[in-house]
Amino acid sequence: MKPIVAHTASMSAFDEIAAILHPMPEPGGVDPEVCSNVCHEVDAARKETAFNLEAAWDAEPEENEPLLSAIASAPRPPLLKRRRG
Image (cartoon, rainbow, N blue to C red; front, side, top):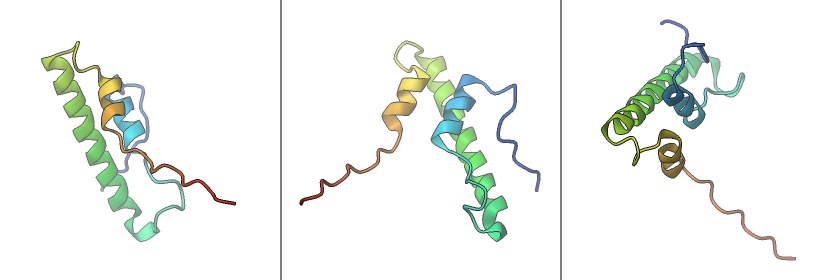
């Protein structure tokens, strides 16, 4: 398998947003035996997201601003539970 490049000078705004939404695993954060597969899955998710953002932008640029679309669809962390003392 070909190695995944984390960033290139030719990345579009759509690619940059996809990279934010689908980060590569931290070094040591994934078992080395599956790291290559995980990186390829992340790369595929990035490509799909970038494609969808660009397609939405091409269809209706004023209604589908890519950064706002990505923010709206990004998963949100659960609210922190308040500690009761």
